[in-house]
Length: 197
Image (cartoon, rainbow, N blue to C red; front, top):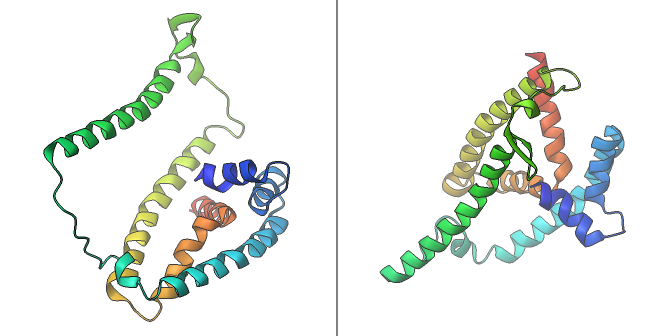
């Protein structure tokens, strides 16, 4: 999400200012939430227009792209399944090895020069104390649990029940994917709730 919300606009925009990076810089860098929110609303307009275009053009082929579609796939051969499974496990192993190297590296004094064991890298001072770590943990648990619950309920309503508000609900579900700041604002609201508790 960080790469899509911030990295892609910077790489594509190069030396030009784009709205998504400007929102991030205003909210996180300069603490100007009013200007960040204003720019987010401006960015919201093309996102809603893109959603409406998508809805209009895919309305006729809805059954082909929805959860009701039943693809007719011929069974794969054992060699093909084994080959793809091996390839997938190799990619997964590479990803896990990056995480393993980071963990191992955190217990080594100086990587590549002094291979001695140390826990000194974990003795750091955090501005604001360790309460910042605990607050991050509680926000992660809160958002993870209720976010998963809300996502399941949302998907059930949109795909299975098809109530009268399913399309607006779908719109509100996909807009955060286009809006980095909306996610930042939600996290800030969650932080305020956790602080109040």
